[in-house]
Length: 151
Ligand code: GDP
Ligand code: MG
Image (tube, rainbow, N blue to C red; front, side, top):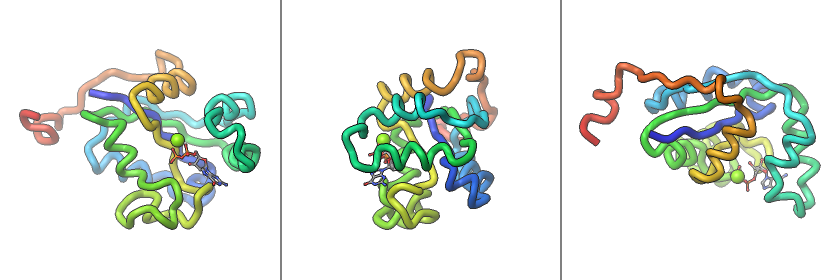
């Protein structure tokens, strides 16, 4: 089992898509291990997007991520990091495959609905960045046999 971080970006909250996007992860068979609403600060966004600090759009994405609160989620499942990245789709919503979240809901590279951790290393760092230990819940859903059989 892996855990991964998903952030429902301000564009998702503003467009009234919270339930719809959470449903996509639920329907896939991922287990919600943590969820909260939080207003991201410039400090945490600078850390979160440090890999983009030389880009001309660095300040713009930080501003966009703090126009309103976001919803941070921890999703759990077998290969959850890869599965969630696949569900999210390509960064640019206009290039993302139909059927993916970004492909179905986004027309933008910046306003692309969700953040999703891109590797086990980043998932571990990002979950620590946004959640305290006691905000992540370890429990088993009773559908595991139906979801995974003997995988
Ligand atoms: P992701 O892992 O697919 O989210 O993509 P990155 O880690 O490369 O970029 C982080 C976020 O920065 C993306 O989700 C976009 O919201 C934003 N971003 C990436 N590239 C661009 C760009 O060229 N222009 C703008 N305005 N935002 C971008
Ligand atoms: Mg990324």
